[in-house]
Length: 124
Image 1 (spheres, helix red, strand yellow):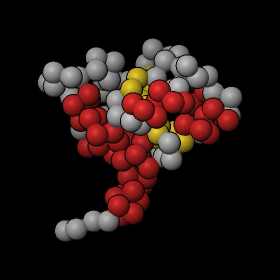
Image 2 (spheres, one colour):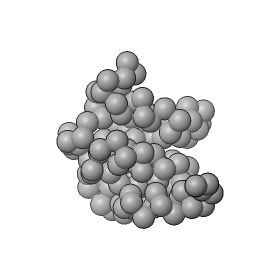
Image 3 (tube, one colour):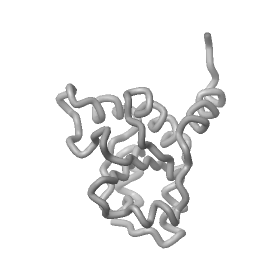
Image 4 (cartoon, helix red, strand yellow):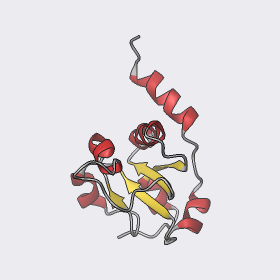
């Protein structure tokens, strides 16, 4: 069955709950929470990232999240709460859906990085 991008985004957004800016701010810095920046490296270099966030671009999220992968990021574990974000909220929703498909249950979509910055979220 063929799916459009719009259908894939709708499905991802239905499965991966959004987290509000205020809720996310309260979780920043906790050892059991990982913020995942799924943007491309050039975007991250140009604008910074959420303080303490891990960069795991969407195109490689499966490899970064799979403990059997040689490029696995050790901070990404099923026990932790994962908060994804990108430039518009679309890639972070799709990355969140992929993580859910991989067995991660505590996944939330923060959405737009600019909203984080504009809302006074800590940036590095």
